[in-house]
Length: 304
Image (cartoon, rainbow, N blue to C red; front, top):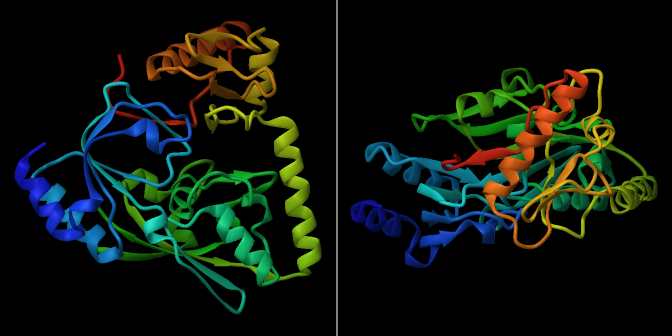
């Protein structure tokens, strides 16, 4: 990593928030990943804008990270700048039926705040292990709800550093995608439009969904959540199970026996293990059912 880049980043965010050769396994829910050449933690939107400007000026590769819940990082790591927008930018405020959250706020924290304020509409997201920013990028969803149902607008930076405020239509949120993902914008904040509800009913629904997750998902193991997108007309987990792949493993990576839609890290999995397992699952499912499974997990770095 160019020493001049590092020096300028330290001028922006201070030395303690610029880490060199930082192991990415410490920053993903998979607990997998080699070192990032430079790992920087901005404290506000202005710092994010200046960091992106430095990356553009020096043509340095960069990636915006939340809490790493939908990400597989290469064993070789990432030869560029990781910009983490997480706890450092996680303020949440409410006014009327609107909840405004910085991109680094956890969805679970936003859902808890909505419950506290008696606002309904975000219950589906209460157990999704991601940030608001990441959820907007991927149009995260679960149990019949999606972010596009509640996002009124989002404030983003485009690749040239321009500040944009996009409404729901402009965000073009579809199944696990959005204009933010397609154009590689950086989410800074989102406004969620919710409705008044009964806190006891909201809380009961959140507790019900929590129980379903504990019962059906392998939460006791590191993973990146659902590994594959839902093929039209099918369920990825059932296709994998019906292919005889329940418990199938490559090295330390395994198809969960509790939910076949999850690839889990049994303790010592490498990114290579995960990628090989994913490819073998794709090949087997296609051979048996002629259905192509597409990964929902994002890949960062070089993979063989």
